[in-house]
Image (tube, rainbow, N blue to C red; front, side, top):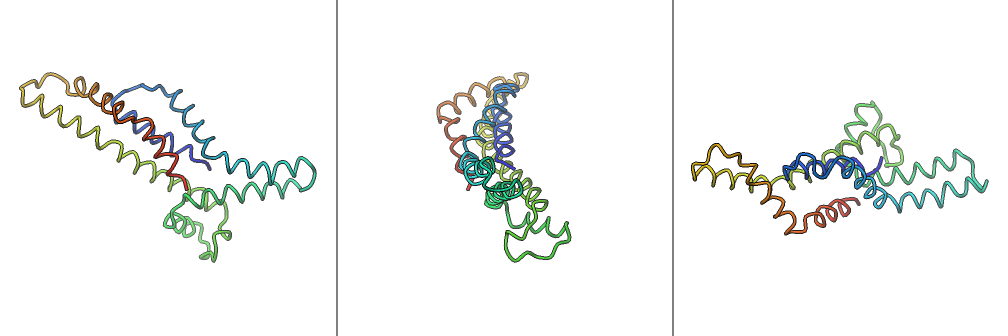
Length: 184
């Protein structure tokens, strides 16, 4: 129910596009994804804490009311990221009547809708990342073929060029900025 899925998938696509099998390692990608998720979700978590958890701990509201406040903020976040088409799919699958407003949707419809919207967005971003590196691979392979070097694996030559390209365009900055700003 957070942006973690999108972030880890995009970073996984990036690693594959670069052609580095285990660099950065899974632990680094997972921890970086977790910290980016905390950064992105911090305003929502703060609202949940201020309006739900702290009043509950102070005895001002019941546990059910605190849960309702938290669910409302998570619902709002998920609804901003979810495509209408995905919501319609799960409303149809659940055999529900068409809702009049987003608050009429149950969480069991919103959560899977959010999940497939996140997957689609992550794959779109992953494809956009892949294209420049694919072009570098094709150019290197074409040059090697034209030189008659068919036995030399193109990946061996293209890997340093892809890493150099990524470093020269400040790729980490671009990827992280794109990821963070992709959340509404």
